[in-house]
Amino acid sequence: MYGYRCEYCRGTVRPRRIARESFKHRLGFIILEDVTIGVCDNCGNRYYNADILRTVHEIASGKRPAETTAVIPVAHVTPAG
Ligand SMILES: [Zn+2]
Image (cartoon, rainbow, N blue to C red; front, side, top):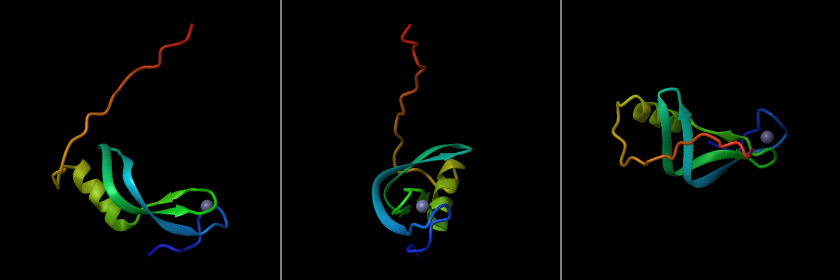
């Protein structure tokens, strides 16, 4: 399913197993663990297959329960002054 030409350069998209990959969905922030994604071996652009995108959408929209919920630190930048 990977091994195709990158959309942005002449590189090749290779499968890579990622311990924790974060996704910014319009309904929320999702993290998938131990997920195999496609990464361009030249420019590093990341590619997600349909299964990954569906899983992200199902969890973000509440159709499928998450296995665990992480607390994500939120802050504003303090100017150095
Ligand atoms: Zn590329």
